[in-house]
Amino acid sequence: MALTDPIEPVAKPAPRRPQALAGRAEGLVHVATPNGHRAIYQALLSERLGLARSTGTIGPRRAWMLLRARNLVFATLDDQPLGFFAVALARAVARRRTVALMLRPQACFEASRPNSHARRLAFAALRRVPGIAVLTIVPFAVRACYAQVATGWLHDPQSWDGFGLGGAGHWPATPLSETVRAMAGGRAVLAALGTVTPIKGLARLLSMVDRDPACADRFVVVIAGRVAPECRPLVRALQRRGALVFDRFVTDRELASLYGIARFVWCCYQPRYDQASGVFGRAVQAGAIPIVRDGSVIADLARAMGWPHLPVAWDRPAPLGAVLEAAPSTAPGPSDARITALAQQGLRTIARSLGP
Image (cartoon, rainbow, N blue to C red; front, side, top):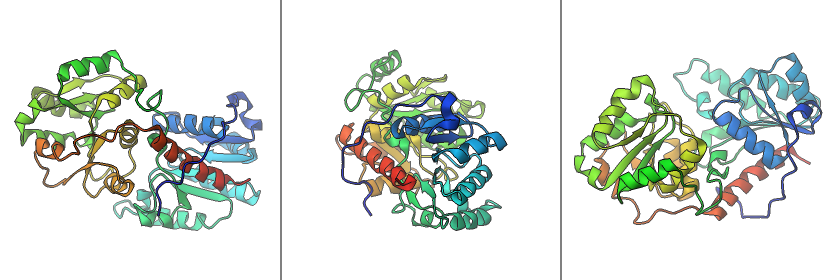
């Protein structure tokens, strides 16, 4: 199965409609809350598809607004699945199409979850209802079982949302990235970006550093993002071993600038976090090499895409230097054509699901 379609011209998106007109708009992009990646997905799809935005819990008034919309896209259904089911089924009865992104399809297959079997049966039944399209952000070629609960797939929008703010070769420079560049002193940068929580796997990174203390002469670890209290001892230990730590809120522009100078990006997360990753998607956009947990969804995705990556065995991690030195001599680098191809595949899939 091809993971991208041939590149075709994309029509200029229709102008964004103001939120005040959401109830009368021809189409809506809905999220339950505006936090984190939800707002990113909503803004991207609203702009690219020319749809208005809807944000909030699905109560009677909002449900009626969503029901009336000519086209409806749930930027994520995971936050309020019951509300999604109710609205999508009502719209199907009214012969109106609904499209939804499913960010965590693995929740339908995890035996440890008490409701996983019921969830799987519900989505398996829903995928047979005409006019309802549930799309995963992981290709079926990577996880074939997802085809049991979804009608199609697209690549994670965070791998094609133009996060570089200027196209290939034009990732911004910021005082933060220039500080890191200067402190790196020519060493290759391994960036661990975003909020630091236990699932990010930095305990594994520490064990890899401890297996090769001299790697700090060749590589520098950069940790940028708020650090959860329970992770601070771990981060301080990495800092004592030479890591550069910026424990604070990091703006999108600063994050983009760090992706732009990183040769490697840490994506080796705990096994309980086995799903698509926005950090991985941004690494692909920047042309960096992700470090991934062997056997994870994103490791298999990178392999299916033919994307250079460095897999790490979770139970027996190798010394960090040995892992990084196994990388290709040059990173892929950013590519507007690659980002465009991923974007066109995703937008085309949504447009086809919405119908004429």
